[in-house]
Image (cartoon, rainbow, N blue to C red; front, side, top):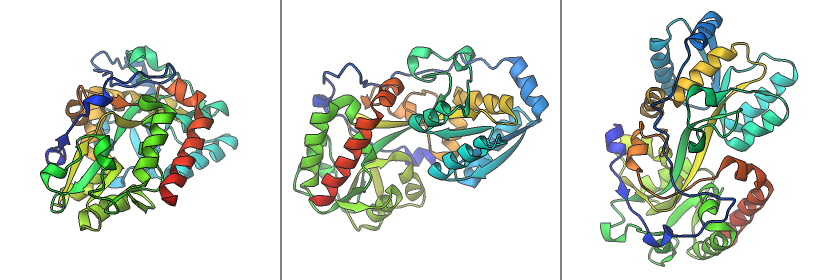
Length: 353
């Protein structure tokens, strides 16, 4: 199934590859091969002694079971309890349980800003992640509170029954043409657009959003609804859609194809161990395994969530050499207020055109 999902249009816009970037922003994928990842025997022993792991996340339970089975095949003496809970509710639950002194999850995943919100409250355990062999310059371990697990590119999707090959967008400029005005959709939350900021900066991104809004997008409450609308032929194309949301439709045989435009906006997800975890060593072991080549490949095969920064994943191989637009965590955190304001501005721009 995954091989079918990965047969996509891989396209690049040369004009986007030579932009000068602000000093506080970064662009371009730097791979962490993971070959040097070390899992100390003393960590395995401590985790085995704890014997249990509680994992909070929003992964589909059947997919989480595949990940758990692979982990337990390697570490059979560690039981895993999986709790499926959405992002904002998950963060609120961990915060509430931590304020009560625990127990809470032993491991959870979230965006960098959410992890640091908990860390600033004293609710995240320092992981000592660099000590496991990750290259600090790769961005895999941006600080001692988090470790990068998967990274989501935002893509263009199209219905191949409605869009001939010659009309498939080859660059962001192609999205501004009138050919499909009013016949394309996007997520009402401009998460993909906001992640062009690292490559383009505020002015270029704002100008692009204004021009894009003039092509009359149909806005949907969530990205899954956009993907479904494209698959059903309600619209011909969808822009700035999380890559993994297309996977279920493709696997069901929907006439949906994917085009990568560059720079490709990327959102990374990080794992962390809450301060009041009952089994912190098991949590740490699980995260290091997930971030390793073996664990990353298992996680992608189960969930469709790989990373352009991890060559062991199919997404990493597919996007090798492709220009990306991804935040340096330190810069993202320093500019949280500005980013939030721009996201709200872009949402209003899309709504009012």
